[in-house]
Length: 474
Image (tube, rainbow, N blue to C red; front, side, top):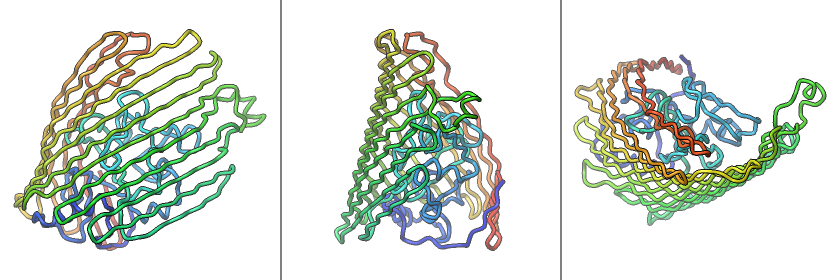
């Protein structure tokens, strides 16, 4: 349970470029949403009132992000109660997220504008792939969301919504802190009467870190361009991040007493490169129907040079993740229905050289899901929601000539009652997680097929508003 104090404020037109066109489309489709209700994307995968869904969605808005003064996503999420962040070295690298007690990264789905950052192997999502300079807001959907989002949305969903183009403006910031920490960020954006817009951004971070030898060298570059028109938007965006850092090893009690900042004899030296491209469309197809679709292509290259009591080792990981997520949204007479498909193709190569010669695996995973989700308001204060999803995984593993497949079907049902000073909701959602590449088979070829992880999430909650006090309980 949490209590928040805030001043009431009306929504304005100053939403990010990602949201502006869909918000207009919702209004044009006749959705009767009061202007003082907060719209979120994550609760239904398209802009909708947070007060009309049977779930809890928390928002970190642009004002809160600016006031926080943080330089990385890990520190930003650390300030939110339901989210727990485990950071190995205090610099926002090698961070692990937990949401509502689900303490492994593969049970919390992390998205950037709806595109997944999660991996199909044991590596957690790279939280440095998006610079804080580019973040417009963060939405956290608490509780199971297996029907709406599918694989790995067990504890909830964290959706990072980035800035789009807006009125002409530029921004430069420079910061310096402890341990020779330096942070530089800049952005420039513009839009034209024709509807064309663009935005460029960059963030650079340097730090020696608390532990000796734990230096951080980080660079992030991003760009987005698009065209907004009366019935929607077309856009293309690209991101690249290069991150070099070292995780210092454990120290004995004697070493800590001598100098707790020393590096020690063991370490993991990381060099991680991330590149992402996304192309999307948001189009109104008449009075009641909208089309949302995007194609994403992400490449990750990670090299880890390690030293331990067992000797030196070099680990290489390469991922290419291609996604496609078309969906149709129908809105009319209190009904909002989303029919969609999620397609993901992952090529994951793992190599390890531990002094006995190189070994590794090449895995090809193909995931496909079809889903239907709806919200319906039969009377003024009551909202009903439901849905189902079918998901299938097909995997190939070389050089061991292994093939396996898995599938599952999940459902959700919920209701939401809106009173004069708050709302009450009850929701049941079935969740699932496919076994990860590193869980089913190791680099020696040992194959141990695991069943699909399934669960049921029940949530009973409410939100109450009195003057400047908001109370949330779930």
